[in-house]
Length: 329
Length: 286
Image (cartoon, each protein chain N blue to C red):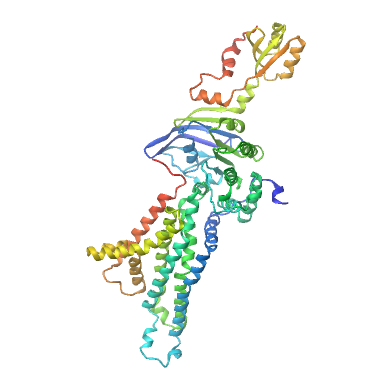
């Protein structure tokens, strides 16, 4: 059975007299798969508390949390050896140069001395701070400090990187660079990544799955990759010409069509059906396609629905209600 | 291949042992301490008194140098508990001055920009962090306290009669143990002030205040209220009392060993609690 990256079992966390996490149980990601998990939720949902519990900053009052199979409380050192953490707050040691900072952080994570220095240089070039590596961190701009914080999180080559609001306060170019780096981390270096962010567009761009928290509970988990795959099957079509025969031909090939108005259809395509085939079929039946839209459930829709602010996403309307009915023309 | 051409590769080789990782912090702290000229200058200045004491021991053990002088002069040149206690008193002042200069730069730079979360998200505990930072300061203070003290003892033992070392072993043990206690207290005070006060000058002043102002307050309390519990907040008197016992000398009047020990334990506990309260990865608003 594949090892989950994070495994929570009835996790309760109390800070002071207030219980922040109310018994979360879930499994996130698969160890070594190089997937990114988005952690979403409104302010006060418990995202940061969950991350800090994984890092051992907070002790669970009940239940347990495991990272890569290691208990966060009892095997804290083993857990932290495998994690790279980029905090949300502007954390740095102002008097250190970029290279010193990364060398110290790498060494503390277990890199041998000579390797730590080499990796410090390598990582700073990787995140785009190569030219500024001998400057003290206090002289860096906000965006540069953000990159330095990312660099310190990956300098020791961790299996899991936890990024807390990685794109906060970045200009568009720096934001794009940060997202590219996160993508590289999972795709090229096989790291598992947990991204905690309020910016749904960022999470949508880099994450393969999302977990949504509200009031200290997990209220939704979605596999974005599967959703994206599934979304490709839903098509909204507007045609001109003899559409009845065209629709019948589509159904013969296994597609489910729902007629909405004259010449307007919602179609659920079979898995092996490509859009090229659809264009060819339309040409064969003398139908001209005026508009073709592939439906795309946005993460915002998923999020809003989980929050109870939206009843259903548009995709569900087709897949759950209309498609099984095979309305036809 | 040049680093900038190589690109990032995840490290998958063997990891350094835990102790080796921890040593990064004291090494880094030591490098920073030695980069401060004023610390180096004071360190050099702190070596003058031990050198004078060494000269004293040399003269005391070479009777031919003062052969023509008064007979009573030999009593003044005795290397005994009074000599060692004087040496310790002077060096303890230098150690406090050094701690006031070097201590504030140890923790406050990490705290100033919320850097602690970065340290504590690595496989080190808070206690290990404190001990690692303390190690640099302890080493610095050792250079002006028990190490020269022990060297003076060894010097005297090698120059005096063969029976001297055996007869005066308490002097050697006293200077080492007494200074260990002292160095631990001074280092704790310096770290606590570094953790609580951001500005170096004020943090340094707080260290001096802890030892000199608090001692003055303790004396005043005893004098005004005609009590003895003022000794509990007098680190200088408490430490001196313990040194006297260790060196086999008489305790200062009105001070007992249990009171002196209790005072040192109390002060150490308060300073440790102050550090514990401050050194957290994240501040929890309750």
